[in-house]
Length: 311
Image 1 (cartoon, one colour):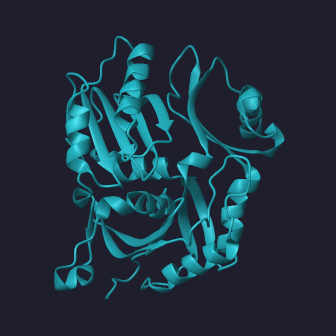
Image 2 (cartoon, rainbow, N blue to C red):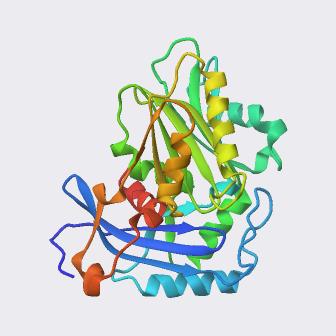
Image 3 (tube, helix red, strand yellow):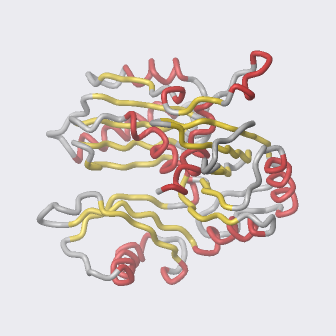
C-alpha cells in the first residue's frame, strides 16, 4: 500500500460488550479512505458492562484479542481514538442559568448537579462537557458526559499494556454521530438516530443547535426496540411541542436497514432517510480483492474515534 508523503494514518478502536473493532483511515479530499479494519469477538464473559464496577472481567482474554486484532493492521498502532461502550457513560443535555469562567469550577458545578443521580461518589467521577449554545441568553446549555474514573481508566491502562495510548476517549454513540454529522443538514429541525449493537441514541438539532439527546440501552433484536424508539420520540415532542421533526436521518452498526427504515416511517409525518457510510468513507482497493465487501456502517464508531484525533 503506497502512501503519499505527509499522509497521517489514524487508528480508531471500538470496544463493545462482545467485540473488538479497529480501523485505520486517512483524510482524502472531502472524505476518508479506509486502509484497514478488523473485528474480533472477545472470549465469552470478557467484559461485564457497568457504570460503577470494573468492566474487564478477563484482562488476559481482553489483551489477547486486542493484540491479535492490532497485529492484523497494516500500519503500526501507538496512538488511537477510542470508542467505549455508551452503556458505561451517562450523557445528557443540561441547562444552567450561569456558568463560571474556569473549567475546574464548571466541572465542580456539574458534579454538584449530578451528585444525587450518580451510582458512585462524585469525587470519583470523570466529567467532560461542551457548550451547545454559547451565544444564547437566559441560560447556558451543555452536553455533559459523566463516567466513573476507575472504569474509564481501566480501558486506558489495559491498552497501555500493549503500548497503545488512547488519546481521545468517547462513548461510541458520540463517535458514531461525529462520523455521520457532515451528512446531517444544518437547516430546519432534523434528527439523527444511531443504532449500535445494543444501544440507540436520538439527537435532534435545530439550525445545527442540539435541542435534545436521549440514549437507551436497547438493541434492534429486542422485542421492545420500536416501542422504546417511539417513547423517545414522544419524550422529545413533549419537551418541544412547537418544534416537530422535519426529517429523521438514521444509521446502523447492527444491520437491519430496511426493517429499521420501515419502522421509523410509521412514526408520524417526518421524512426518514438512511445515511450511507459509502458517501463518507471508501475502502482501499486492496480491501476489495476477490469481490470482498466491507460493511462500512459496522465500523462507524471506530472510524469516528480515528477522526477525533484530528479534532
